[in-house]
Each structure stands twice: as C-alpha cells, then as structure tokens.
Image (cartoon, rainbow, N blue to C red):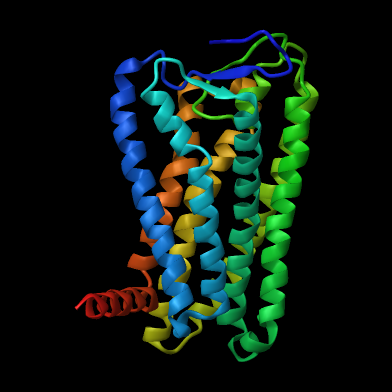
Length: 312
C-alpha cells in the first residue's frame, strides 16, 4: 500500500507488473542465477584462501571480486524474489535506501577493481622480473582498500543527491530495485542538473577505468605477441581473455544504463540491462574465471578430493 507520509514512505517496486506472465519465468531465472552465484563465488573465495599456490595478487583481487559479487546480488535478489511472490510489491524507505547505497557502492567498487586487475596482469606479463617487487602485499591491500573506499564514497554522495530530490508523493518505482535512474524518474522537479552530475561521475567511474584497461591490454597484447613460447602465449591469452570477457559484460551493460539520461532509457530495456549486470554477470564471473583458468580448476579438484577423503 502506498503511503502519503513523507517521513516513512513505502516504495512500490513495479518490476514487470505490466507483464504478469513474465513473473514466473523471471522467478526461476533469478533463483537459479542467485544460487549459482552464491556457490560459485563462495567456492572461489574458499579455494583462493585454502590453496597456498593461489596466494598471489591475481587471486587476492579475484577474491575481492567474488566477495563483491556475492554482496552485490544479495543486496537485491532476495527482495526481488519476495516481491514476485507477493501481491503487494513494496519495500520500506529504509530498505530502499540501504539497497540504493549498497548496490551503487559495490557497482562503483567493481569498476575500479576491474581496472586494478588489468594493471596486475600488465605488470605480470610486461614486467615479469619485477612483478614481486611491484605487486607486494602492502600495495595490493592499499589498492583494494582504495577501491572499496572510493566506491562507498561515491555511493553516499550520489544516493544523498537522489534521495533529497522532491517526489511529491510519488513512490511507485518502475523497476525491480532501488537504483539511481529509476528513483530520479520519481522527481517532480527538473532533473537536468542531476542527470549531468550522474553523467560526470559515471565518466569517472566507467570511462576512465575502461580506458586504462584498454591501454593496459594494448601493452599486454604487444608483449604476448613477442613471446617465443607458444605455451606462454596460450596461458597469457587464457588468463587475460577471462578478464576481458568480464570487463566486456560489466562495462557494456553499465555504460548503456548510466551514460545516457534516465528519461531516454527504454523502460523494458533498462530493466533487462539492470538485471544483466546486477545478477547475470555476477553469476557468470565464477564460471568464466574457473573454466578458463588451469590453476583454479586444479585447486577446485584438490579441494573436492580433500572434502571427499575427509567424509570417508
């Protein structure tokens, strides 16, 4: 039920309410994706922690990515599953604020984390003799902390701007969860300035990291092509290929969603793209990194064998 009390309103998340026949298939997709995402990302975290051979900067950042994706999906999917099964698709004001801040913070953090992961691959391939000196533990911890801090700082800033916009009693969010573009559409005043601010911040968090990633991989491609060992080239392309696939999926969807005015985003496509980068991509990341990574597959097999012998 929609409330008129401005101090503690309830938001109504419309989702696919106009297409009720889509809700059952969507429930199945969300449940399967969320389950796979939890198991896949938890497995990567456990394997990276338990296998000493994976105690390297690359897997340290991969563990951060898995933890991020785990929290990313958990901030939205349980509420979405609940609303699909409910006739009244509401979320409390506090729940909406928490969802907005967490989802935006983790998305911003992932933008920078993917750029740092490309820098790690650049140093490993282009400066292999200096890798241990450059990518030491203290630097890795500082870079990871900077990712999380910048992501949450950006989220608090953008969320505050968005929530302070007057809504004039409008609380029907035409989306599955509380996200900046969808909430801006509730405003009853001109949002041109907010759209400009959102665009500027998205350039910082999307286009600049993406540019750095492309520059890093330009140097990586040159270094790999100069390798004499076919096995070395194959391993380098395999590792970097996994990261590039993740980068393409995440940045492609995020750029479509955020680097255009919310008012110009297609209603149906905006929802589908949000589901893709908010739910499908975190599910695919563990599959992409494990299926194309020989060390990770070996570590998984070792862990499964240890668990099997322990049960015996």
